[in-house]
Image 1 (cartoon, rainbow, N blue to C red):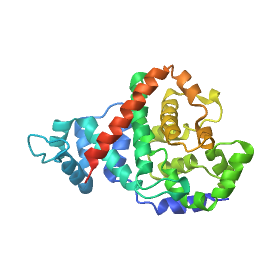
Image 2 (cartoon, rainbow, N blue to C red; image 1 turned 180 degrees about the vertical axis):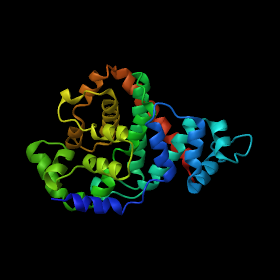
Image 3 (cartoon, rainbow, N blue to C red; image 1 turned 90 degrees about the horizontal axis):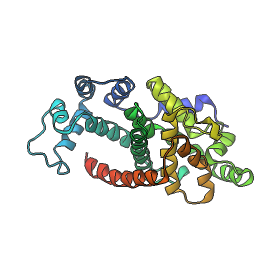
Length: 282
């Protein structure tokens, strides 16, 4: 069994999220954000500023003029696109390595997290929620705990798989039984240590579902459902699908038709390709 001190020590060894991305998470937790505030958030970080300008001036956008500043980038692409570039660039840097314990090649975690974020935002818009940007961020960051737990998962893989086979529990439940923590526990610890806004931490914390009646807030339900849809596509076997066996309850709670989910899913796959192309070489 792992201890809290072991987890905290491993979290401390992670490269921190960029100052610009951290400030943006704070702004997204507020009811409104001004363009001036977003521009100032980006400009506190010269590395992120350089990345923004590189992406904006790439062949992907083929803008008619050269973008020379963050305010100029916002004028050309819009504030929401700028926020996406900052958050996606920062999260990609964190999630780029192989996670052998989870069977993920380099970049897989980021692409799954991006798809979750895109679907969560689309679900929020479809359901007319007010916190669309915050739900996008929660979907993007909710699996950070896998980076920390990966080394321990790899060592305990046989015990975890045996637990799932003998009890029928989910992978996350087996993680918690064998290690004392699951990846969502650790994601919350990361979010708290990095001093993310409590509203963002709460969404990540409440994405765990042990029973259908746990759906009491549409925000976490949307992020849970988004993650379920992405993970079920990537599931290699029936055991993995057990992690997301309440997805239909979440769908019913949000009053979403299956056709609408399929449409959002298709759109997210295309959007992932677009974002991958947009950030290529950044």
